[in-house]
Length: 433
Image (cartoon, rainbow, N blue to C red; front, side):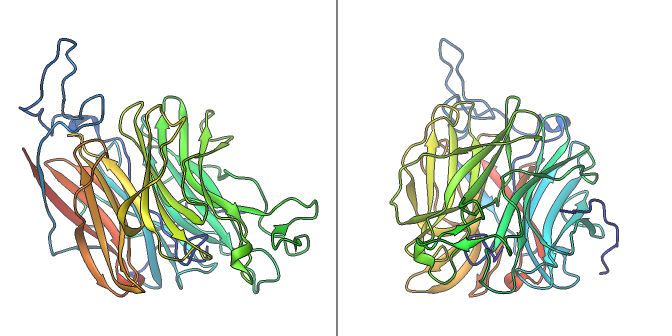
């Protein structure tokens, strides 16, 4: 398969994981076409109160699903989205308002270097995929980890980050978060707006201070930011879940402060952004990375994040969750979900069931196996199912899945295959009671 030389957006102006050893971006929250509203049914078990607070197909006001049981069927067969050349990773997928399915992903000569470009593939059914197009490519820097969202007006928003790789460790390695918006086609992205502050080239200005922290010519700390999951809408606001921290001290990682989760908020359509750090309690030795954010209800929000414990951001750490009951203003202490996972993605089905998909790692003293996987919740994220495997990847890196609900009790999942050989999709079916 030959990729078309159609550059729809040209940028002028992360070691894998921005702050760790691998990076990702994927799946997501989208607005389903209006004519799909009748594809789910109200639960027969919903209880009516005097205030008519009933559990409908979207769940009740506390986030509980409108069903009591769900069963997923994961097929063995998969469809090829892309596999032309190089390394593929970090896909995301949405369903446009016209019904077409749009997948975006990174393609480069290897996992992390400046040739990284963002590619788009389109499908009518999630099985047969059209020829890929270059959506965004700056040959001087790595464009990576794209995530896409269909806004309530049908336009498509994308968040991703750009990573500059110096030739050695004599200057900071820098990455920054970006945002752009397209019309309803998803193919005509406009101005690329940098969400966080800072520049990319500190080769002549940055030095290491006495504490082992990179600072610029004014003594200000050099900071970096990234994202791996899609943004949400909240009223007239757009919110990107990101992770933020200091440029890494590669020579003495222990001196670098731990990364933290920041919700970047815009009230003017993405022109300007305000960072709001998530103040959720967790052990101070913990790196927080790759967050996913979901509005279960207007008041109940869920945040999940990858963690690492100790000196390095690539260390072992459980997937954790924090919950807000006041629309993202305050957050509960982080709680482990009991397993190691990277790059979670959260979606809420029309019936109110919540799904978290991720790269699962069987990690004892070392990683013995990886799998594209998911869990689900019937009670607004309060409790979760056992892990359901979608693809066994052996000991080879893979995953970073993205998901979108389709009509007729189907879910489309996209992920990158073991070793980054390509992007695949599967259609998972489900039955409910």
